[in-house]
Amino acid sequence: MIGEHVLAAYAPGGGGRDALAFAEAVVAHTTGRLTVAHVHPPDRPAAAGEAATLLRQAEAALGDRPAAYTARESRSVARGLAGEAGKAGADLIVVGSTEGGAGGRIAIGSTADHLLHSAPEAVALVPAGWPPAVLGRITVMYVDRPQCDEAVTRAALAALTLGVPLRLVTLALPGDPAERFRDDLAMAIRLAVDSTGIDPGEVSAELAEGDDVADALAGAGWDDGDLLVCASSEDAAAHRVFVGEVALKMLRAATVPAIVLPRGYS
Image (cartoon, rainbow, N blue to C red):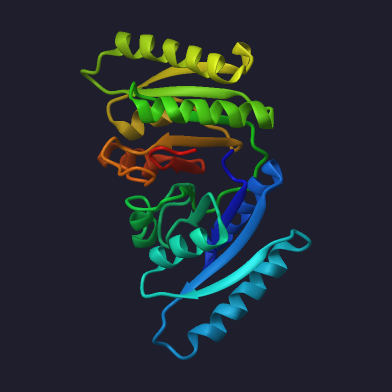
């Protein structure tokens, strides 16, 4: 299940705090392990001391929550986080939004962008100023392809384990075959039920129509306790995250935390 070992990318500012808060919320639901990581450049003498100070701040913010804390030198924050996740055995890397983005939206900076095109672990993105909330529903963005079928099965299992409902959403833009999409969603509901045994009453599907990706996504309706899950592109290498242009537009328009699964996630 997603979140058995979560690595939170901690850095100064609101994005670091949001990543920490969401990572803590995930492990609270999954009873998993939490590692807090900060990546700093290798060529600045004061960086190691600043990293230690930041990690102490994170520890104070978590209070009694058990966690491991680690600092890593790397010229690339994204590569450093991926390396630390592999070393720790984490299955989810949590990254906050970059400074200066719109409040309540996901602002994708260079670190998140790199992870979204190469990470071997699932990547979670947290909207700026995310209000910590109890998980109330898992939503899978669905199109009829094997990676999305896999995401439906994994998300249904997580929903069943955590006791929350599962929603399947397909975005329909002008000119898209809406009726075919509805048929695909009906088959995806059957897949979720047959593959995991989740109660059919706990699974819903919705065709979200709009003039563009942001408009269609907003029309689906979102609550603070929602979690968005999407699969990687069919262009992704095995066991790697890779999102395409449409998925990037969707993530930037999202108002709830989003998790992108690697291709072949298990």
